[in-house]
Structures are given as C-alpha cells and as structure tokens.
Length: 559
Image (cartoon, rainbow, N blue to C red):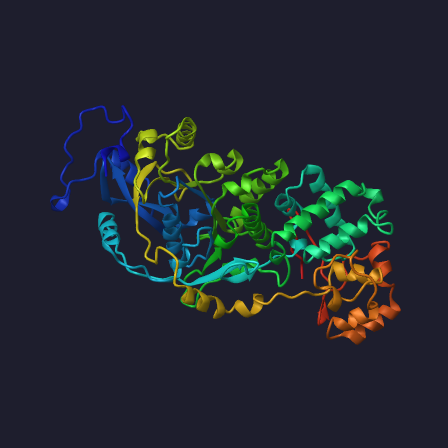
C-alpha cells in the first residue's frame, strides 16, 4: 500500500517525529497520533471488529477499529465507488451481528450475498489479509433464509397486499404526481371505510372503475371527488405496471415482516437475504418495496428505547434509487421513519456510492460511517469528493487525498462510541468475511429455500374474495371462481349471485347465507352509509379487522 492511502493531514504532523518507543517485548509502540485514534475505539462492552488502523502507510494491527453493538441501531452509511469492497463490508458486519444473536436483513442486488450461508474458502488473499489485521479467520457459514420479491427469482416469495402497501409508496412505484397521489389516497380511504380489501391490482382497478361509474361517482362527492382524468391516469399506470410483469408482487399470502426477527436454534441471528438480481431492471419497484418492508416493521414493532443490542439491522442497498424523483411528502416520510425506528430497536444502513445520494435530513441521522474509496476523474467527481470530506468530523488525515488512494477492502471509518459521541476518523484495513464471498451453488440454494419452515407458508399464492369480487357481486357480476383470471370489472358481466359467492368462500357458507338473509345486501354494504369499518374476511372463517395507517399510508391491521 502506498503512503498516500493514509496520509496525515498537512500540518498535523509538522513537528519532527521522534522514533517510536519500544513496547514491552521489543515491538515498537504505536505513534502518538495513532494511539489517540485507537483510544477512541477501546470499547468495554460487546462490539463488532471491523479491522486494523492504517497510519502513515502502515497497517497497525494492535490498533483495532470496532463499532459498539448497542450503537448499531443508530443507523449507518456504507459508501464507495464500484469495486471498492462495499458488498464484502456488508457481509463482514452481517456475520458478526448474526454471531452475536442479532437478525440481519440484506438486500442482494447483485446476487452475490447468498454465500453468507456457506463457509468461506481459504486462499492466499484471505490468509494475507487476516494476518495483516490479526484476525483469527475460520471458515464459517451462518443461518440464512432466502427470499425473492413475488417469487421472481430463487427464494421464498415476499408479497404485499395493495391495502398494506398504501397510497404513498404505490404512487412512487406508479410515478404519479402530487395531485394524483392525493386522489389515490382518497381511493384507499374509501376502500378502507367500505371494507373493500385491496389485495391485488385487479382490486384497485375495480374500485377506481366503480368510483368513476354512474352508480359510484357520487360516493366521494362530499370529500372532493375523483376526476375522470385522474382516474384515467391511475388506471393507465396500473395497466402499464401490470404489463411489465409486476402483478406477482401484490397478493396473498402477505409476508409477515416479523419473520425477519428470528434467531436460529443455536442463538445466532438469522440472515434474511432478499434476492433482487431478477428485478434489477425495475429499480423503482425494488427500492420502494424495501421501504415497505421497513415501514411495516416500523408500524408493528413496540418501543424499546436504548437496548443492549438491536432487534434487527437492515441493509438497504442501491439506496440512491429510493430517493431519485421522490416527492417532498415521500422524503418526509422516509426521514420520519428512519428517525423513529431507532427507538424500536432497528438499525438501518444505507449502501450507495457517495453520501450525496442520501438527502441531508437522512444523512444527519446516520451515526456510523464506512466510506470506501472514491474516484475523482471528472470535475463532478472532485466536487462529490469535497462534499464527502465535509461530512466527516475533523480529522488528522488529509481526507481528500486519502479517499482517492484507498485500496479494495480499505475504508475510512467513524462510528458512535458507547456514549453516543463520534469516534475519531480512522483509515482502516477491513477484516475478511468468514463466509463464502460469492453466490452459493444453485442446488444448495434451492434446497435451502424448499426446506425452510417458511416455504409452506408463503410459496403458494392464494386469491380470496376481496374488493373485485365484492364489487362484482354488488353489480351482478360473476363469482370469484370465474373472475380470478384478472379481468377488470367492466370486462365481465353476469354470473353468480351473492349467495353463491358466499358458498365459494369455503367453510361457514351456511352461516354466511343466514347472515345475508338477515342483514342488508352486499350492494347496500358497499355503497351505503358506511356505518361499518370492514366486511368479513373470508378464508374458511371470517375475522373482522380494523385498518390503521402509518406515516407512509401503509396499513397493518390490529387482529
């Protein structure tokens, strides 16, 4: 490694440097400046080991750079140019969190994080790195679950219902403007109050079509109404969205994000790996879906305050995609979620190329920083470099020079100490992950997926009675068994009546018919006074539930 990789700041070491004193046993002691940095990382409680200090062109393995375990819920940023080692840094941190009993969520955009489940392979590079940083490297695999959005890719399907996804996140996926987003929120509000559960895309299309029909357009008259033009934009956006193969992401069974909080029988935290390589060409979708996962956790988890360890650490890769073209309301919701979820024991690490990719309001909440090398080939690169340097505390290094000279697997680090204060900036040679640095064999991945306890719960999609079927029944349309192919409400006419729809719902049909004879018709329930909060949910039995919405408009129902 060249000296410029850890160059002290000009003037910081201007005085003549005395020879390093001899430590006991004849080894040279650390230079004074290095000792001061190392003292900032001498934590007494549980911590994760990141690597060894770099100073004046040398790796100093006796100066270990660490991050306190309780501070991992104070969020963080892993940044750096392509090829500088960000993915390996994620893997290194995830392994150590798992080893200390903390569950981890990893967004695997490139498809090379599955190796966390398999022991690593020793080679000359691994042996050299572990010797340099005084790491006792042992090939180790960690307990892992593999997921895929909507089952597209290899993994347990992760689906969301339209109702729980909410209008704000859906508006970003559909690229709606502010006015259209507000109208979509009005549609969700109507569906909530009328008990029209929006499970999949055809449910939402059916409600929009109903609210612009002759019989339904008066429903929203007292609260602003829904213009035909706006409804047309929303319907066209939904059609285009579905034509791109997006329908599989919405439906049931909806994934319970509480599954990410599990530990293995041996006490280690489960590493949940969400494969996103199959949807790389749909960045708006997967980045927004990741935000749904985080918002759902935020909505469900109780307050825990300052715990001795996080409940979950969530790594949000390609974070810039989340913020691109985001509305002010969307950014406000992200900021609020990130700020408040810390007290629920969840840490969030954003992974991107430069800190400039993250809005200042969010960046200010990221207390732990691992900054890999940046490139400065163009004027824009140089501007980004200077902006990055300004986001760090005062440092004994010349950071502009240092950040352009770091090697692969090296980074500039500052974290929060056990007292919550920023540690000194430390150039660091990072440790090597102990698990496999790359994808695992396809057969092993398939076995891991199908043998998971979650596979039987989420693998098979179901299509139950929801808004589409209820509106079909109210308008004399076909029953659920005949309309689940995805046709819209204006494409199908005639068919089963309300009694037959209830029979198709499964167990408890006789009781449903009795209630139908004693209570108002489905038409009256759907377009009537709105005195009830929700209709029955039919999967063999019917369970009434009240919908509540969070800052993102996402819904999690109280059972």
